[in-house]
Amino acid sequence: MAEKNERPIKVIAENRKARFNYAIEDTLEAGIALTGTEVKSIRNGKSTIAESYADPKDGEIWLINANIPEYLQANRFNHEPKRPRKLLLHRKQINKLMGAVERQGMTLVPLKMYFNERGRVKLQLALAKGKQLHDKRDTEKKRDWSREKGRIMRARG
Image (cartoon, rainbow, N blue to C red; front, side, top):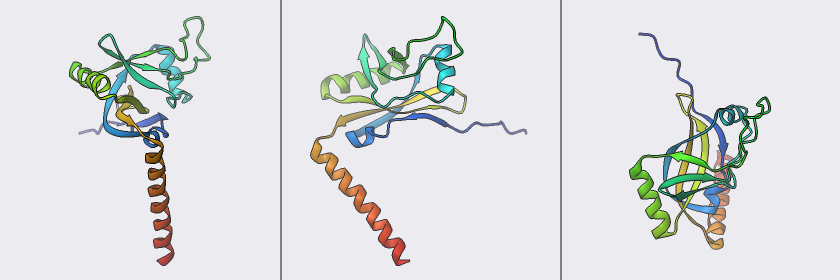
């Protein structure tokens, strides 16, 4: 049999500060409802999700403040760069996330945006709780110690 030409997962944008600023409880994959010019702009690789978050509204989950710049070759049908974008999830997932956000005071943070094997834009969404300043310091100490430990082990041979 002929093997399919499978594409690897291509990461478009990553929110690297999220793991530092939030204690991540759970992650899930969500699709994003995009227009054609948004997809073309994402393929150019200029989008950012660093300051974005997801918010439940009217029984749906929306991605707020994600920046997908305008597609340069588009004409008057171009999109708005920071418009709210609907996240595509199953009803059970939406109910679970809405309950966690409303009852437990958690936050929905996007971790990374990527193209999956089928070429669809997906968003890895995390259910997270904000860290206090002392928690951030503790995380930084652990990371520094693990780096130092690695250096010592390499030096010993």
